[in-house]
Image (cartoon, rainbow, N blue to C red; front, top):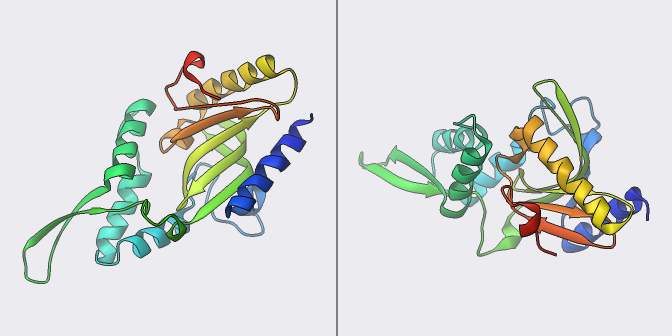
Length: 211
């Protein structure tokens, strides 16, 4: 089974689930429908801004802008620390504070995802998504976005299952080292070859991956 066949099948499956299908070159700089200002930008900014506004209608625009900044800017040179910090924001919300109409300080959390009503979120999947970071250029087979945030990455291979899946796993180790910006918001990594697949988290070793 060719890798392109596996990729097409995966994209069709996501479309069936209701994801908007995007083509990486189209939404990249110079593409027909750009959603990124540079190849180093991994978040689909306008989708995230729209989601923040829709999910947090009571928050002032300035606070939503600050929330966007907190989500898209990393605070540590360590990928795993950035990933853990983002996961807390995703689950608990982004801590914000502002002065209410009565002059009192309001402490709140801005939601990044609507977990109770999944249909209110923006679901998209892009193939052939190129990222450039520190002069490293890598092209992802499939990236899964929720509200503009790249929460999932899928690496596809063709060939004998055990051999090809391990090759995909090793590929992810290279990606994490060379383009860590893409993985700061990652919640799941998937490797597949059309016959078998494994899924795990950013820090999961081969032994911890699950079918």
